[in-house]
Image (cartoon, rainbow, N blue to C red; front, side, top):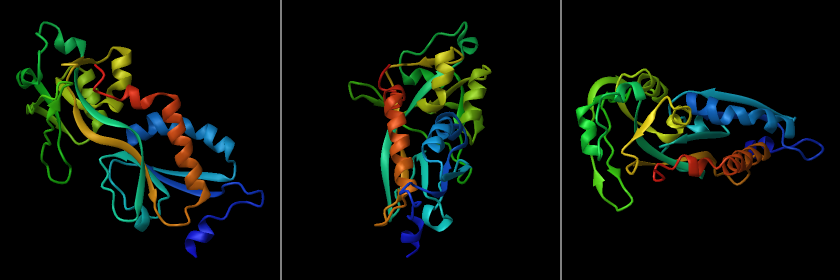
Length: 234
């Protein structure tokens, strides 16, 4: 009954109601927030209620309509639509690389100052194997010169010339396009799964949720973000 009530539209058959969405801070502000003006103009009876934080939420228990992110465990009762790959690449600033010889493969990354991601829960640094188009794999632990639990902090530290970091392409893209960061070993990347949009798989999904999922997926297709986030394209 709650699902049926939640899916009620206006008298004109338009999606309506409060749309609660969870997303990572940096990713959400950079890629999802810019979509909201057009979305709300198209669906004026929907009200956006967004939560920005870098954690996996329990959509059903916490009352969210959808979530956008990568590396989310698909719990029972949820479905997802893939938006783009979550490929991790190695980057550094031109100032940091000045006078240093760029590595020819991932093994060379170990000799640089490393900006690493440390889990806020386990306090461990996660290492992912990097691969190339030939199918070769190599795991090289970065020297943990500095550690953060937030990808944007890692990017900013790299921009400031503090060392080399391995970061999801989605976070590094604007810095690469501006020249603030340079990609190292461009033939190599790590596969962290996909960036997806999630919602409950109940039989009656609210119209506001369905149109939001379709709108975001279409925007990612139109902006060619799946291609631009692909670390396999050196």
